[in-house]
Image (spheres, rainbow, N blue to C red):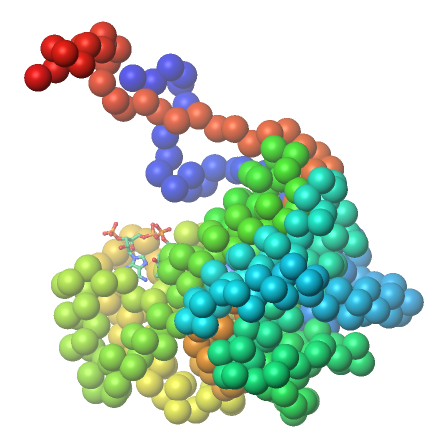
Length: 375
Ligand SMILES: CC(C)(COP(=O)(O)OP(=O)(O)OC[C@H]1O[C@@H](n2cnc3c(N)ncnc32)[C@H](O)[C@@H]1OP(=O)(O)O)[C@@H](O)C(=O)NCCC(=O)NCCS
């Protein structure tokens, strides 16, 4: 019983939900572009801080702009008293994504009435690594490690997680990961952030909603599931029988398939190469699993090409960096907060409330029967 002529599209596939200058996902050609720059060029050369600046301002920073961003980010690393107390009160076995969602909410409570601004975006971005590292330290029973203002974003995150500085190679790898994941068009969490922003709500509410959306395995929750799937497969010889049986049980292969990409995800290509270098044991099994997964997916749907997505080799890279698998998706959020906040700012600057319609498929209008007559 539709009241207008538009057609319901499951998953809003192909529907344009916003105009954006922040990033473009070119699914047919396997290209990802941030503000006009191809991701492969940014991933090799840029720091996460430069890319975050690019997403927020639309241009790459000059040296003084970058220095001042670094200073502001470093100044945003400490948590508020309320956030520190909340973090200490959470049960020790809380999922780190739930920790992030809860503590980001409390950390941002003092800005609840503010309009989204770049300083608030920086404030949130600076705090994500601290929240996660402090909780990780608590889980290990360690004293909290104070953030270091002399370290860059990736290096400081690793320092707070591990209590010591990481090698330049590991810092570079995490930095590349953070650059690659910082934005990705109208993905589910970014859409969530923009919907919330469109009601003229605050930045924190957008970020909390986005974290909730990112958590699901169809979005950012996949990389730890990739590890679990590889653990179950165990050996390259077992890949094909395990995966054929899994499909019979309706199991989806974690780290494969994408709504937009019909060719190789450019981020996955870069991460695959990093994984080959940094995590050869993972790579040996993973590359066999990849070969079998692509073969089966092609057999099942030759008309709809499916490829390896960003999550598959992310898992191997994040493992080589030394992150526990529960921290893979939260580390995705450490990066994506830059994109989320850029989209919130863009939405706020050209706002119209996002309010689509639903197609009613319930009963025809009818009269309620009084309770006494319903038996
Ligand atoms: C990412 C994902 C949610 C995209 O969903 P989507 O846009 O609805 O996917 P598509 O419309 O392209 O799927 C079409 C068909 O391919 C199948 N398919 C897609 N991804 C698959 C996967 N990873 N394993 C097995 N089959 C898959 C679907 O089952 C569907 O077939 P069906 O209609 O017969 O059930 C989906 O591919 C998925 O769940 N992947 C696994 C989780 C993952 O890696 N998430 C991280 C995303 S970055």
